[in-house]
Image (tube, rainbow, N blue to C red; front, side):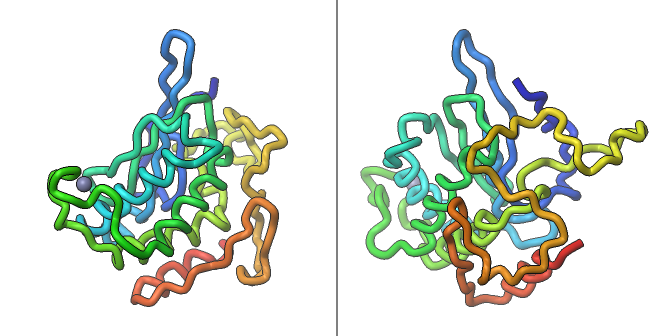
Length: 223
Ligand SMILES: [Zn+2]
């Protein structure tokens, strides 16, 4: 089982993305808690409550109905700071394992039309606080991260150790790589995003019609 570095997370340094927050070993199962960080803390505005609420209803519905992973969804709910969601799943998992699932989920949310499931006074505690358009925009921005994640979008920033080994960028300590359809290993890739397509990331970057798109663009520049 992987060592979980979540206690070292510096929220000033972390990026948006998917991270393993922690893992719980119960008697004979392991639960993985993912940090679905949709907004980079202190660099982007947090989500409005109406957006968070609509995403919660839509994504929870989608996740639980997913044919492949639905039976492994234990919990999905928002962070109080409104920068993202927690997703608890059955199994010893890594972000790469659920990237396709999350791409499907946030594609669904970003394109959603119609009535939001569960948005009635009988089914929800404050159903009028829903903003579908904001939810779709926030989901689209997150989707764009999901389809082309860098390492910094999949692993929490780790405190630098003094040992020389810690400087090697190729360290895979504590990682389960396997041959699964994981994230691309990204170097200084300058290929325009729209020309990229792979089996695991079939998505096309979504156009987002608000002022935040400039901020996102700057994140795509190679370091
Ligand atoms: Zn609700």
